[in-house]
Image 1 (cartoon, rainbow, N blue to C red):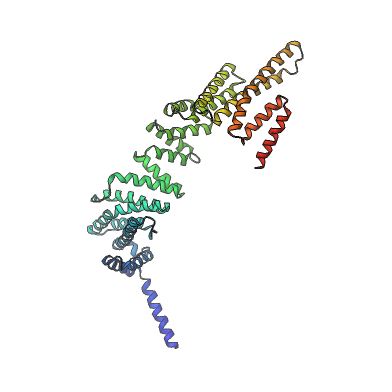
Image 2: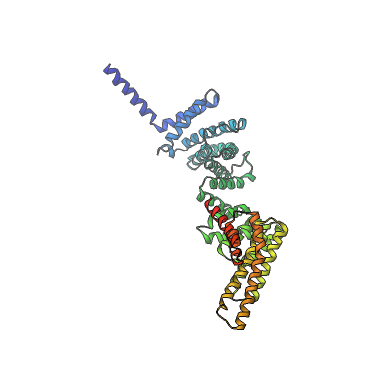
Length: 427
């Protein structure tokens, strides 16, 4: 019994040693692939065994220096790609058994070509890649539909890089269309972004820009990725995109929002006026223009009375144009109320400056300013009431109404709006 145990261990050790010979494993994988190709249904397990062998052996120093080993690696994973394509065509919801097979197949043929010692080795690698490129591309779409964005990125990138490798080696006899190559690169960027691989996505989008094949959406995507941490690059990309695609609304709005965030109000006006010409029914553009002139009015109210009033009138005009487009626009209604309210508040500051002058002239001036202030608050009131109807839970609207009623000594209404605000804060 003891001798049998020793013999069993010896046999197990021999098996283990045999399994750890990567060079032999690669050759065995090639034979298994041949068996699989004779009957792909009955011998599917042979393909799985071949995949396991090439995965475990390819990083061996001797194996990874051998172009024939890489050719086998590429062919095994190309067989896996072809199988997944065949299954996916019949049932798009069927699981994809080897999501990384497209990129691994490309890697195998690429390395076989780069390490080739003889002409036929490179030619064989390129012929295999040429024959399989369309299916590698197909798997990018299949993986995207399956929600595996990381693997989809790898497949689309392998498609683009594979086509470039074929061109470099003058191997252009492929069913893959040249027109699809830049699309494959673009799709790889989108998939990388979806997968959260922002550095890879940015690298792809930058590559498209550098090649001159980027559409407006690429510039917008790249700008959005750069604007937080790479402002100089963001400015450059946005300027390039706007110059190349001056009529693209996506880039225009990206620029508008960017300038808004930076507080560059004057520079925004030209962009917004252009946006109105491009989308005359877009209410938000009118409101935004109104808000810019509103801010300019407030900034100039103490330094340039004439300029300030001009900006007030322009703000009111754009808000009213917005209401003409959409009578139920909360932003437009509220903004008109706020414009009048802020004007009234400016009167209150002026009122305080003369409140200590008890002369007849001072009293008369005080009463005149107070009358203007009260009248202006009255003008704001109906717009805030309408805004409340459109959005009963907007705290700023309720605060404004409470303050106006307080100035009018309508204490019962002040209490009502205090309760409304308390109820909102509890939610």
